[in-house]
Amino acid sequence: MKLFVQAALYALLSYHLVEGGCDSNLGNELIDGLLDMILKIKRSGNSSDTTPTEIPAFSVSLTNAKDLGTSEIIKFDKVWTNNGNLYDPNTGIFQAHLNGVYQFSFTVMSKYGKNLEVYLWQNDTRLVAVYPGTGYNEGTANMVLNLKKGDRVYVKCGTASGAVSIHTSNGSWYSMFSGYLIHVSK
Image (cartoon, rainbow, N blue to C red; front, side):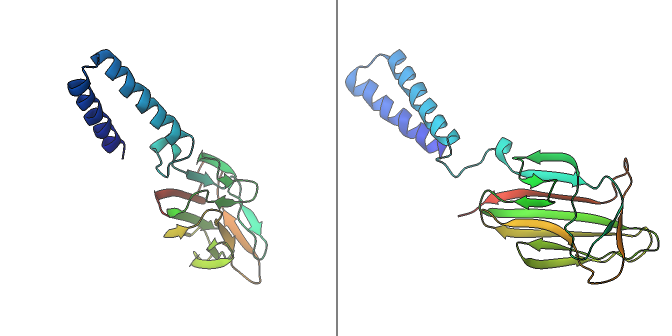
């Protein structure tokens, strides 16, 4: 889009210079001013384009091993990256602020002698499960999801009964969760 606008402006200015005998310095100032206005409009949110610095992305880990309650959302509390602050480490929930296609991944490790079963959720819909079993085993899931603005994604304990534990080690970060916007959609 930007190239089209630039080409149109240059064509318009060239025609004006040839036909109207306008000073070329004035023409350059006019183009620079128009481009500045277009960029300001784009930055103000009146455009659906995103630039690399605006792409939502997060990567978080669990700091300490813990026993999980039935249907407990895992609160990954070590934040590595949180572009846009769309992941909340207090709730364990990522909330989309743009319609788009997103990629999510999580890895969890079971604690020795304890079962672990967790699911990736989108809003109130359970998606995929990971069951690493018992004893320092890892499981990983990756999903590409179409999200609408306001949709929530999180990792939640899936065992209905019995003791479940998630393992990690401060400094080793065995259990983690990440996601990012692939592209915006309407």
